[in-house]
Image 1 (cartoon, rainbow, N blue to C red):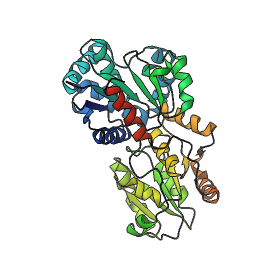
Image 2: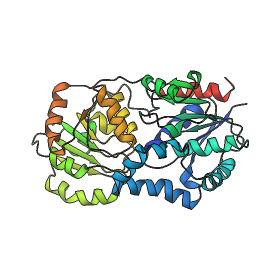
Image 3: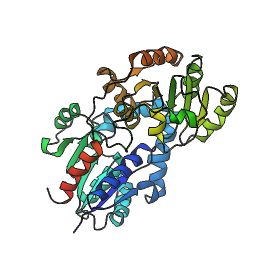
Length: 361
């Protein structure tokens, strides 16, 4: 009988859900009865307010507060996110979501904790796998109930082992990406569709699914380059999109302001450089696509860790002064295609390992 798999995610942005949908599709291709379970659809209201809406409010409006919490030894040493009464209620609700599952795959840390708590209670009899979408080994990820960790890079193996995770529970697959990012070739057709001159170099400015970061300042800075097009993707940040419409009207030949898009690979294929924040998935998509990434001052916590990991390896250019965006864009254009240092075919590799786990390997 084909395994039943549940890919659990939580919508802090859109990246975790995109990874979840990618894995669902790959597992279905291997014969699984697979589905995606989004925590915001069923967790208690106070859980959602605390961990999703509360997190987004904290990192967007009080980033120093999240930076303090993320780096606090006390917080890291807690070993869990939710207090027992709240985590217990969430785990009991997940029992229904995961009924009959052979495998649960968590693409986000709250989803991992809820599934691990259910296993620890003895009521979750599934195998549990975790997909890391950031380049950091945060202590709360480490739970004995996790059967398999899928890591984005081999240099994270040692940090997880140092925290007590056995080597046979660690696999390096890379972050599972949607189709279109790997083996990307230049395709300027998206510029024509947007009414832009396809002969101009083009900067794609994006702040992840939530449209976070100093994007307005980055666009203004990039527009100082008279020969460049600028395409801003605001994601779910409709306030930013509306605020940027007057700027687009002042620059009708060179600036396009877009909302949430599902055709990011096509737009990225038309760009010469990506200007973005430190989200693990967006940076991985840029690296897999061979595009140069200029990274803006980003959200604290895991995004700072992503930037540190990649900057040390010279995979990205970090722009700590938004006024220097033009210099970084010209340097990216002169340097040509970027490095592709991460594992290829990550989604298929991950799905193959997960299939084996679900079938008892």
